[in-house]
Structures are given as C-alpha cells and as structure tokens.
Amino acid sequence: MDVIRAKTAGFCMGVGLALQKLDTALEQPCEGRTCTLGPIIHNPQVLADYEARGVFCAQDPSQLDARDRVLIRAHGITRQVEEAVRATGADVVDATCPKVKRAQLAIERATRDGAELLLFGEADHPEVRGLVSYAHGPAHVFGSRDELTALHVDPGQAYVLASQTTQDRSVFEQLEQELRDRLPRLTVLATICDATRERQEEARSIAARVDVMVVVGGRQSGNTRRLADLAAQSGISTYHIEQAEELRAEDFAGKTRVGLTAGASTPRKLIDATQHWLEQLPE
Image (tube, rainbow, N blue to C red; front, side, top):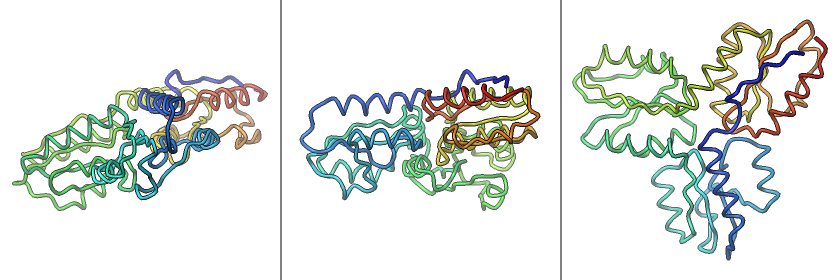
C-alpha cells in the first residue's frame, strides 16, 4: 500500500513543551508527588506512560498537597481553578501552551471595557472553559453556525469574537464575516494556532489525492477529531484510530493509496507503527 504521510503529523510546539516540562519535573527532587491537574495532553497512551513513571493525575485542587509539584496542563485551566491550585501551597509549573496563554490574556484585555465574549469552540472542552474564565463580562460559546444564529446579540453592544485555538480557520472566517454584518462594534481576535491551520490544510490536500485516510490520535483530542472530520468531508473513507491495532485489512481492500496524519498530541511512535502496518498491505 502506498502511504502519503503528513509532514505536520504529530506533536505541536505546545504539546512538546508541556511534556518537556513534565520530564524535567520528574528529574528534579520533590518532597511529595509529581502531579498534573487533569490530563496534561489528550492522548491515552502518553498518559499511561507517565502514570507508569509515577505521575499522579489530579482532577481537583483538593487532591493536592503543599509538598506536591503540579503541572498545569497544556490546554490551560480556569483562573479560579489556578487560584485554588496555588492556594494549596504546591509547587506550580505552568505548562499551558504559550498560544493558549496568549489567547487567554488577549481575551482578558479585550473584554476589560465591557465587551461581551463570543467564543467559537466546544463548550465542555477544558481549553474553552479556561478561555471563558478570562472574560470580564458575559461570555457566549457556540460550536456551529446554528448555535451562533440562536444567540440573541444586541447590535448596540460591543463584542469580542475569539476561537478555541484548534478550530477550523476557514469556518471561523465565515462566521466572522456573518457577525461583522450584524455587529458594528465587533473586535476579532486571531486566536487559532498556525500549527492547527497547517495540519488542517495538509489533511485537506492529502485527502484529495488518496483513496482512504487514517488519522491517529486520542478520541478526546479536539484537534484530532477535526482532522478526521475534514478528511471525511472530502468524500473518502476516514478512520480515526488511537493505535494501529484498531485497523482492519478488509477496510482497505481495493485501495491503492492511503493518507496518514495525526493530531497534535500524538507521539511519533504511534504514527510510525501505523505507517508500518499500512505499508504491509497489498496494493
């Protein structure tokens, strides 16, 4: 089987930096535990590896102790939760992706004078909860054009439009134009990560040249799910997997060329293993 592998597949800068900070924390002496507050990234295999190395994944600040060292996950956390974490007296290492942190601070500045936040993203995603917490006033989260249309917006009110960093840029730009036509006092923040855009553009390009697509990454990973959605929109069969073992040879019968990409929190070894599995298939 001929495999076209995306050059952008795998760890982005923010994920790599967060895991580097966690590795450094594990090498340093600590009186208590090395912890993360929530999953440091959305990949179950990576999380299992760190759990085996002794990292404790705390779900709430109440599980932390002053002797612990705790890393704030790459997706970031809400301001209120961060205050609670620091109040425990634990040694806090901020592993929030720099681009997520930049988006948080941009929202804080832009809403300081009374503007309401309109945020394009998944309402229950930890990054989105963190971004919303930086708004000074009301915040409205929408995940689709229908949800945006359902919002009751006041043309006389000032609004700030921002996005979860891993959303589809082309969709965001369409929504932005619609809102500009409705809201004269609209400020738009550029919060979608360039790495996300590059991965999405490459996924579209590869999907147009192959018979089938495979996307590797955690099912809880929003950016991985969007890569799979984009590939599927091209009209070809698309398989979102976490490991190569999930694939079935019969699904590739009659196919000659497969595209391979992966989310921003997918380790190289999982992508390599998937590529090796696919290359063993007969053409």
